[in-house]
Image (tube, rainbow, N blue to C red):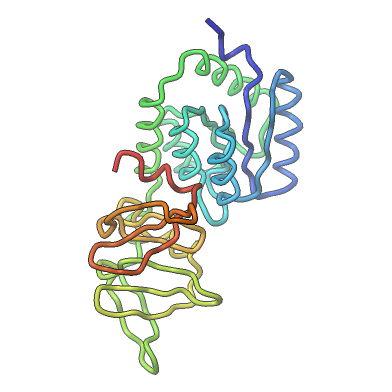
Length: 258
């Protein structure tokens, strides 16, 4: 039987700061010369697309990236059977969460010695992968890093014609980016706001809302089904609504087992 730890694994590096991304790539290639294909991404959306297309065996992920977090990318990597190492700036709260979740992490700026230790652990796990255990650890980390009640969005102040309406977050079915605005759609009304989706996402409960496309966030409890249309594109339907919302292939891992 082949030993995966001795093969040339495919690797993804996702880091939004160009100098840190370049430094990590250089150290990684020096520390692990047997690597196969290595792909670098500069944000979470690009990383998700790369995971869906190439299914890397190992991913080094910045925990906080524009658009999509490292946790979301990690879920996709794990769904395809890959291993994950997070990178993070020093933050006692974040480090405590990583240690409690028993997940590999590297402090920025990444040092060669700490990278070598992380690579050694990853190579061991490649030989004996445990996808279920890693998924549970990612869940635990997300729970510990989740915004507290004081930082969660409770109300949306939105424009409807010449009026401004306060919409409770429990009323919202989905958010959709359109040009310079974001649609806020509820059961009985629709409004627009100027807050970018990535800022909204940071204040939403990740158990209640999922990003399913670069420009769409939906309430999980409102989802009816996801299907592929005649053009091969994935569409999402909400209960009681005719409108179909786009779903990126990069986010399809969310729907496994639904």
